[in-house]
Image (cartoon, rainbow, N blue to C red):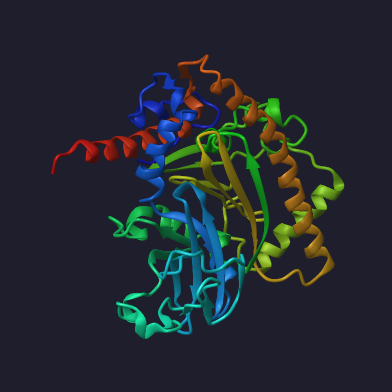
Length: 398
């Protein structure tokens, strides 16, 4: 369903999405028992965004990604054939973690325990005294993980046999992603943070603008104005488990000279890189369960919130660019944009953690979403749908 919301007017987006208006239970935001259900129902069987093709630029390159919520370490490689593959970072001899580096380039991986050696295609190439084992080395390849790419973004699915392909999972969102600058990106700036907050509470903060004028009074000038004091979006969209909004930008916003110089240069570079066809109001695309992308012309960025425990998460924010920093002005503009983004985000972290501390007390049985927080309601309901479906499999005798 694609719900268009008239600018600055009350909307019936919640009713149109069929999500109701009732309060939301608070316990799923802090109870360890519910987190365990999410771990199994969502993160061990849903497509997760984990990297970008620019990190594997040529055959032989690799990256390693921890996925704490699934107690997993993922090894991603690009083979001689150019294909990207994903494996559990686990030696098939006795389970030792195979690769300790976060990234690099090599054509083989040797286990630090007993020197079993695997190619970057996952096949076991050599094992000392192999003839004394009671198994064929052909059956000892690294354990594969389903992997696919959309718009340059790498996704994995930890389920042994995913129920749907990445394209089926993304649906209409695949085409929308491919229209964004990330599809052409060749490099990125990255900011990683840990936060003492539930992954849903953390993610929710970046799905609503109701807090802008309170939490970001000095840094949200482009996103709020007299005609739209809360910076509410122009429209919402719902696409299966995913959702979107069109961000409103204040046409009368004033900026500091240095800020105007930086963002003006970014827009200029974007046009030169063939990205000038994007709409003036950026699209915010939220992919279930934990990824969103802001597709602005000058500063396209993504944000992934990875759960660690019921009350702790890790966020990865990436600003994507096309081409190298081949001039001083380009370097300045990109560095300024990244620093500005980090500054704004730093204002969010303390307030998110304060919310978690309050919820942890158990004082609240419910929390409340207003009509302009419809993306939060849709997100919560999607989580519940997955958890309920998983619960049903536990009670199904078949």
